Length: 230
Image (cartoon, rainbow, N blue to C red; front, side, top):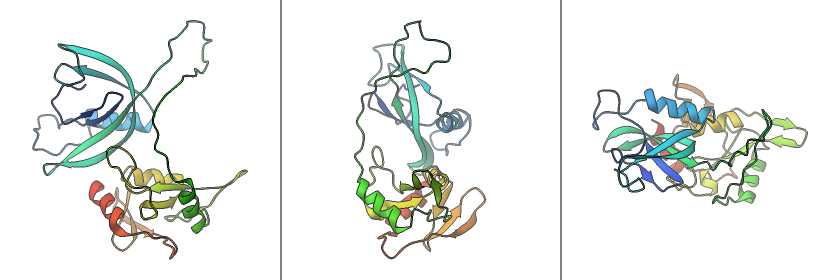
């Protein structure tokens, strides 16, 4: 629900949504990953849509009362700082569902036309980073082989697009397996100033990050990532 009580950035189809304060807490307290905040994380992890309602207290809401505005998906979530305290943020993207005809067979998949703007990434740059590391993960060294060839992902340390607007440059890219890409995006791992990979849940050092001389990786975006999650 959006009704002007929190610092949400509401752009209609895309919402930078603020989490809720702890039960009995105030705007001076750190937000915790419990209750509604945890529920939004679970929705993200399980790809479950959330219902968005706007009230008259927000610019995009009705003149009075409340209005249900449909389903949104939780694109990602992260910790942020707001006047010294920790807050949780969620990027929500509107889902446009087709109108049911009533004739669909039970269990049938439904196609829908979605019109959206997508960030154009430098595919050549991503391919170069993957080749530098022989299509192996910089964290664990895993080289995943499929019938179509090796599979690895080019991961941006500082995410592209709203609200972080990270750059699509070599200094902001890592070559990671799907598991460590997901851990990087959700704050499961950070990389310290000595290029050691730290698992934040148990504070264990997984090992040193593999860094090639041909990869212009710097601490600028790794430090930004550490500050976000620690």
